[in-house]
Length: 242
Ligand code: 6GU
Image (cartoon, rainbow, N blue to C red):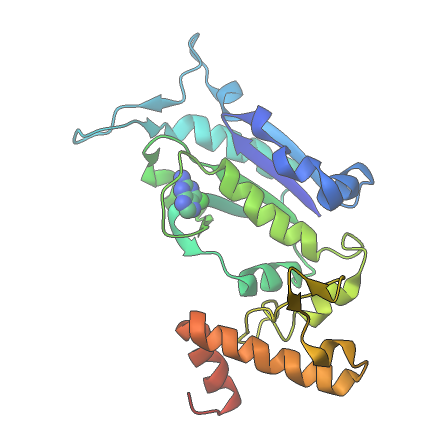
């Protein structure tokens, strides 16, 4: 799996992805990342990448030709790559998207364009038709952190990166699969009694069927309480009444 990142802040990468499991997998070559500075495609002596918006208003807009040259260069390098543009106007990222992209065996290359300022010239979107991706309904300074969120979610699902495959498999009943999903059940570890609080008896029983049933019931309960949207989708899929 290969990523090509287009940004005016290349020093922000690999960022969090240089550490822990993702970082180890990067060093082992299980996934790779090439970071290109959009500013390198600016031709004037000040290396200008932005300009004032037509029609007036606050903020600056990234210039089309500089972006086009950066994207063209990345696409020459990765002709089959999926092009993504990080923007709060995009589709809000869901685990189902990660799942769909990861299981498309045809495309394992991704070019991720990180926007800054007020945005990019709309004609770039018209011409290149990137997948526009947001990580939630709030506004960040730019797409760099969001790109790392998308990459971490993908790297995490990449074969051989997660040591314990069961961790993702088990999530197919919690958040994870393409199906409607539930939030995670509560977890406990040693000691059995901490600060006067004990661990639910069933988890100490060694009875795997009972444990499974308890966890499932807990996952349903927490999902119904916290996330009516997920709960309704889950019930609809299972023909359950809410
Ligand atoms: Cl992808 N970019 C920015 N600038 N803000 C965001 C976002 C992306 N996703 C949520 N907020």
